[in-house]
Image (cartoon, rainbow, N blue to C red):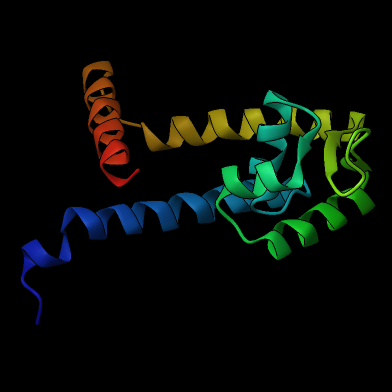
Length: 142
C-alpha cells in the first residue's frame, strides 16, 4: 500500500490536475462543437496564420498522422483551409477561415472560464506564487 506522501507526490498531483482540467475543458469545448486538441491548433493559427503542417506538428508535439486527421476534419467542418505553399508545392500551409476565427474567439472565452475554475479560492498572492512555481516546473521539463 502506498504511503500518503506517495499518493500525493507532486508528479501524481500534476497528472491528476492535467486529467481533470482536460476533461472539464473537453466538456466545455464539446458544447461549442469543438473537439479536444482543435483548440490548440486554432490557438497556434491565431498567433500566426498560414503555418506549415510540419511547424504545427512540432509546436503541438503530436504525430504527423494525428494532425493530418485533425486538419482534414476541421477543413471539412469549415474552420480551416489547407493550401499548397506558393514557393514549395511539397509543403502545405494551414489557414483560419472566418468560422475558425469565430471558433477561436469562443475558445478564448472557454479558456477564461477554465482559468477562473482553476484559480477559484486562491488569493492573488497564491495565484502569482503558483504561476511562478509552475513556470519553474515547466522549465525543468522542457
